[in-house]
Image (cartoon, rainbow, N blue to C red; front, top):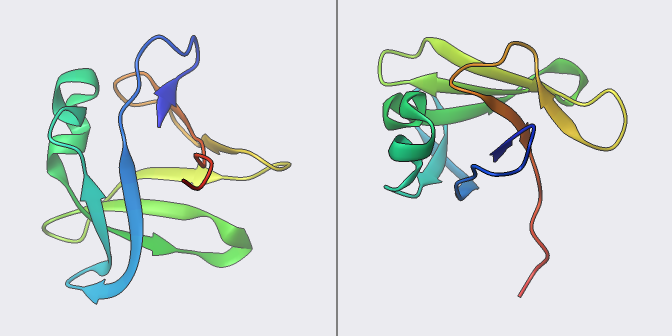
Length: 90
């Protein structure tokens, strides 16, 4: 994920395995420095219309991303987070 200018980013992996509150998410520990809210993210959920919610440990939605075209952008910027980008497979 990154901010709109592209000068701050962090790596997250949306996993397919279930966990409390949704599906597992692997958040790079460095994300909390770039985007403090990421230190609270514990899971993710796929919602209607392909929206993605990132939720905290008490299952509260903290960030929502939607896809008006082929990219995901935040419904409301928090800590400057603007988009999730899929990285090319290695």
